[in-house]
Image (cartoon, rainbow, N blue to C red):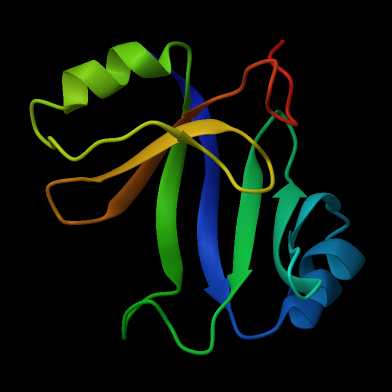
Length: 131
């Protein structure tokens, strides 16, 4: 049911330092910028790492936890409704929704260690157009 790892989401104190290291030094490309439409603030990046895998960074004033900057793990799936139905047995609060700026169909849940996991499916409404 799972196609591949889609992205890893990481908190950062500085979007500029992310750009400096991942874009300018390592040579990755910015695929999408997350911009708050109410104040035009640039608060995150989706960085293309090749083969439809990405690093996602969001600006945070502090770490998500004391030991990690990891926000969540995301898996791209072929049929999000099917996997949501299966996982609702473990998490009845699962709710399909669309991303605010990328319009990707998605839901969030937790694994057995309480790690946040996102599942999403690219479709014709998302900026990532299903292929």
